[in-house]
Image 1 (cartoon, rainbow, N blue to C red):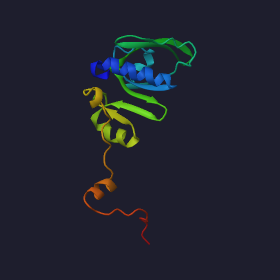
Image 2: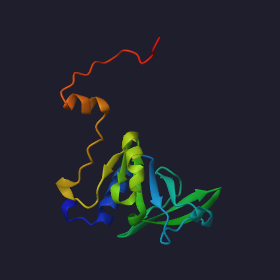
Image 3: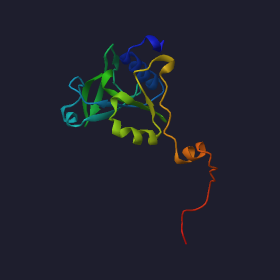
Image 4: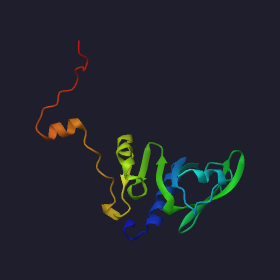
Length: 156
């Protein structure tokens, strides 16, 4: 199924799947196509919390974007959110980041956070998270060193 999907369709599918499981936080790269309250445009990226359980959200999914009525500073606002601007989907303990949409200098910190980093350039069975960066312990063990747990770094 995913093999024949476009990037927008993959993002839409992942968002809808996450929303079925509960409250979902989405990260967006700000772009002129993102329609949110004006004061948010000064930020390069924003995160929004969404849930089907929120009252009167009225989410509608289209082929290139979705819309939802959200509350900002006590005011209701109809947002239009293009899939191509999504860089993160966070639901429960799962965080998915899209490699092509994240500043490469931020990737080491993202890897350390435990987020799954996907490349949208690969599809279907090739769409797997990047392998995590090996730890010092893993690198030493790979070189044939026996790693002993415990001990202390305190010098007396």
